[in-house]
Amino acid sequence: MVFLYNFRVISANEDIFIKTKYRFISELEDFKEFAQTLTDDAGKAKVKSGKASSYTRYLIRLIIFYCETHRDNLEELSSFEAVKKLEKIKLDESFKAFNQESNRFYSATLSCYLAYVTSKNSDAEEIMDNQIISGLNNFENQAQVVKENESTYPVRLPKSRASKRKNNNVYSYPRNYVEAIEARRRCGWICEFNQEHKTFINIKDGKPYVEGHHLIPMAVQDYYDNTIDFADNIICLCPTCHRKIHYAVQSEKKEMLIKIFNEREKFYLQHGIEIDRKTLLSFYGIF
Image 1 (tube, rainbow, N blue to C red):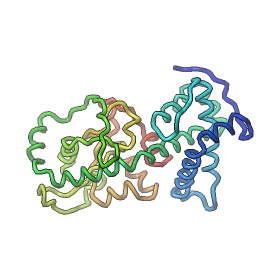
Image 2: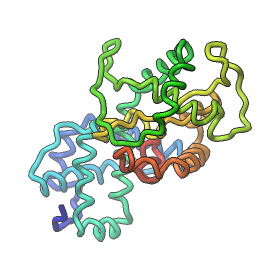
Image 3: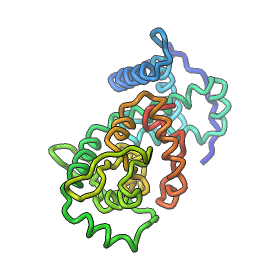
Image 4: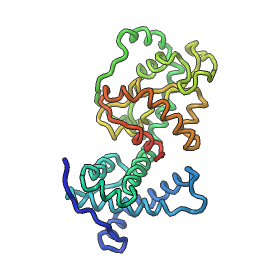
């Protein structure tokens, strides 16, 4: 769908801007705080930056553009359904020129917004990730699972995502232990970022200890109709590199993500997943 819309500069003093701002005031303040944290973490601002406030104003304008072009309202901002709605604006041919005239601030705002929604959906999925790491260490039949699946992998076909399940009053997506074990088999139980990183022998399975990490985070599963819980999306890392991909400064994290993504990118379309480097980095708050 390609439509033409007369994009315009909307002043913060206009009635529609003010009404939209106060309709989502709580979430917009939360988004602004998140954007400020990303700016601080990037280490690019020597003094207090106004970029977070600018992102917030541009997000309000994007909401207005969407509602006007699609005659639809957003119920809330912290869902991937809302992200996909706002991203439809990029389909408008006139948006590209308008975005360029605005020094690409609209596209940067969309990237920041995608990172924000990912962050809002991360807590429950990180709990589940930690549970599967613990569960695999106590999975008694790993060798048998590997043997049974050696002849059938790699399987690269689109598969619909599972339904969320409630666990300790938190809803999250279930993980497939078979895919997690297959990911370890493929890498030979060696850290995929740096094969020189040695760990220790796991008492549970007699293999070098590695931890699985979904390159496209499970926190963004709602962004995709097909599952992202497959071996091609699970990277195996030593404990240090696993912490690094979560908590390192952006430059080091970006280096890891690009290196591993370049090795995996060709497989995603076979699973029915559209992903590029820019989108992946946005999931991690890098743009």
